[in-house]
Image (cartoon, rainbow, N blue to C red; front, side, top):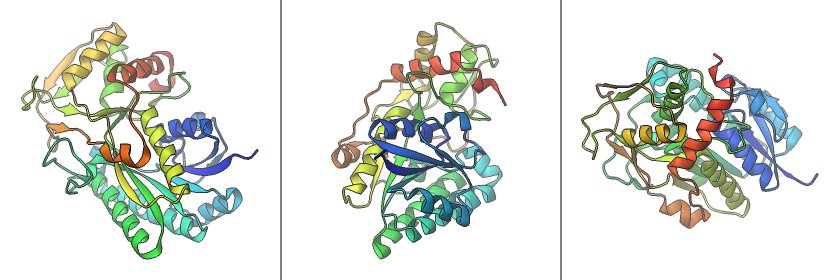
Amino acid sequence: MNETPILVVGGAGYIGSHTCIALAKRGFLPIVYDNLSNGHGEFVKWGPLEQGDIRDRARLDEVLAKHKPAAILHFAALIEVGESVKDPISFYENNVIGSLTLLAAAQAAGIKAFVFSSTCATYGLPDRVPMDETHRQSPINPYGRTKWIVEQALKDYDQYTGFRSVILRYFNAAGADFEGRIGEWHTPETHAIPLALEAALGRRDGFKVFGSDYDTHDGTCVRDYIHVLDLADAHVRAVEYLLNDGASVELNLGTGTGTTVKELLSTIEKVSGRPFPVEYAARREGDSTTLVANNDKARDVLGWSPQYTLEDIVRSAWAWHSTSNLVTQS
């Protein structure tokens, strides 16, 4: 009955719902605020669900007054890069206007701790690898720009109003709850690991690799895959850090280890025991050769370090996708 309430905005989505598990384990009560446009009511298992949109100031004020959360974690963003190019207006309306509305409501409610779900897409194409937090930010698509704009707002709010935040820049989130209660479920799915797993399960014809002529040891591009439960752990640590009067900070969340697409597919075939067709196509515009995090600052500030390997990621994701029918629904 003495659990500290934390408002998890977008908590019915992939990373938000896994963070609710971690919050509950650490003695917090996650209050999920979600419009369920991309989230799933079935994923709200560790605290109450308050349905609402981040652009709805009156509804936000109502929920904040009712639950009086000690902090807010903000996951409620549109995230699909390709969609952001086709429909930038929706991304600016939700990701920017929605975030600013949420921030205004948080300040009016007297909340002093805010954790923002950001992305390595704010960096744009890398000047150096691994990328640390001092890397220039020059996003190359509307999705990355909307996240970068909110980051700038948070820095201004901190400097001029004392509103403290932790900005967490993810690399490639992947994996699932090891108990199989929740997992990655997007419609449509665009992420490499679930797409490859669906191919292994026979739910799609095969897997398409974009580019086999990159300057890497096997010609395919390199990404930094981080287990969603490691991300969740970092969010809880960020909440605890702010509640203990920590200063505003931005942090990368990645493993610091790069994996090529071919290495990823090999791991998926090994874990699943099921080979599947792979087609090689031309590179996609804007794809970087290598995106890998320098995570030293997150270790120093939060005492955080990733616990799970690529095989752990694939094993947990395989368990979720192979036993759940939810992911096949449209």
